[in-house]
Length: 200
Image (cartoon, rainbow, N blue to C red; front, side, top):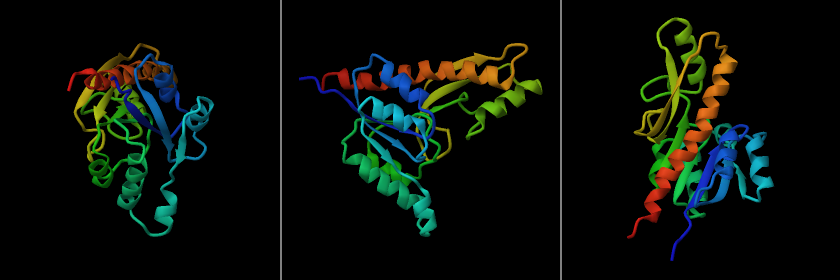
């Protein structure tokens, strides 16, 4: 009997990458969408698709003098109740500590708008664009990688090069890169899910 892989998606923003996953022809079930930001439109996208959602803010922890590790451990426990096979970070703006990664015990993959070893952090697109303006690079790109405690440094699963084009503004380049991300997150998720099709 074939068991459909269960996937949890973590988001912080509009959810366009979540939408790409929901629209894709993938043999999986998104069982939960988590956001650390209450206003994230991704939560509305999930609700419209009748997918369970969880708002999990860090601020109550920091306000109470509790650590990021405590937040991570509690979130891992909540996610584990869903018994996922895969966790996808699709625009999730929070760096996990080992307290999360050691507890979930399933693959955790992350979409990042830069190539391996280049421009870690939340301003990757802006940093790449500035480097292009200064003549340091001719292209940037995006990747989906395995998550480790080190920021945007885990082993890449798939990558996509996005060249700069003469006359690019930051907005034009970002739009082209986001389009590549929408394709790449589906490709990477499909690749990771392939292991569930293999005979035990």
